[in-house]
Image (cartoon, rainbow, N blue to C red; front, top):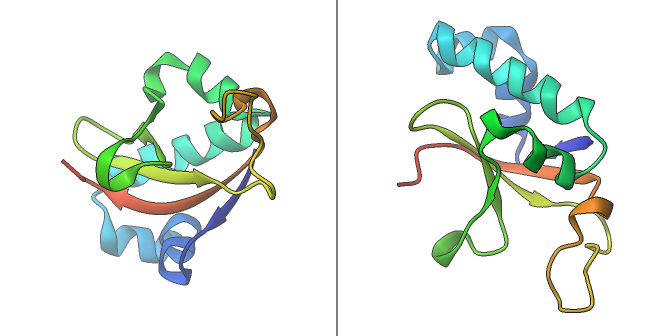
Length: 111
């Protein structure tokens, strides 16, 4: 999958080791890098759902339309589908097989 970032700060957090070390502890830093590699290695959102350790799920309420995967027990990587147009099924839901680009909009504990 292709990954973009909602803000320059998020992009730096996810791509610069120096910035990551200042924002996350060592374990989360390693896990973030692992998760980004896992996202890049798959072809679609459907593939993310197949990796059970990610616990990929669609969000509701304040985050309706967004998805999340686990970074650890409490921290999530939150993203939206960035394909233009967003692929939809006839019932209006996201076509996970054809969603191939995400935009990371946050990393943190939204609970």
